[in-house]
Amino acid sequence: MKRATLVLLAGVAVGLWSTAGNGQVLPIPPGRWWERPRVAEELALSAEQREKLEEVSVSHARELVDLRAAVERAEIDLRAVADREPFDAAAVRRAFAAFQQARSRMEAQRFELLIAVRQTLSAAQWERLKGLAREWARETERGKEIRERIGPRPLRPRP
Image (cartoon, rainbow, N blue to C red; front, top):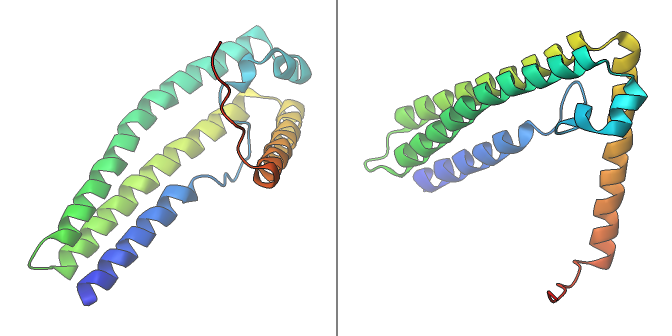
């Protein structure tokens, strides 16, 4: 009984950690927003700023690949330790702590990207970008609400 409860708790914790990164402290639009003509125009991004944003994005993306892999390895290790017999609660706790550390390093890297973006933009550009991010979030939420009301679109046959 204890083992099943601990495994369930570990699974719940993994699920919570996997969704925790969705709420950003400094909200910015997802993806390569500086390449969108409308955004670049609204923010009046200079060629130098676009180049810097690209450079920062690529650099951080490379780091995130390794950090995501570390999180996945730690998750695999946690599951393996939790399923092992005889059950060792201390080992599960250590594996969970390692998972939390890996996740924390990944979130710190994401935050560093946000800081680098903020340093690249002027105060006015940053405020406008936050406004655009809020607009896009509202549009995304409205789209979700509409899809929930009307249901999934039927598949169209290919011509």
